[in-house]
Image (cartoon, rainbow, N blue to C red; front, side, top):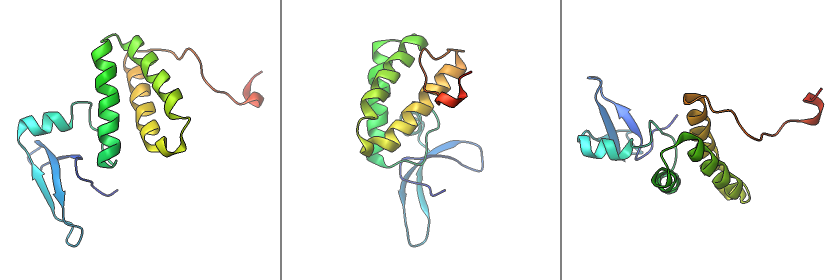
Length: 125
């Protein structure tokens, strides 16, 4: 896995840091360990491996959903509606995957069962 700018990492001391810059020739990272920056980068959990524009889009979506409601069930419903919208465009594949993972994490954390799901016909008895 390659580390990208904006990813969260942990220093040897166990403290979190955010990747500010990366030198592709040497592989050296420039890290920021200032608590305010780290809190901003990790405000929706430990999410790594995405481009800056995808990360900012995901954070915008999650921020808007969190502003609407704090109730986990309503947040899952809002995420599902946004996923249905994102799945219409194949260019949103990565964003859709990360948002789906966040939704599933929220569902597992609060024991929320899905209201609708896709299942192959041959699996139904």
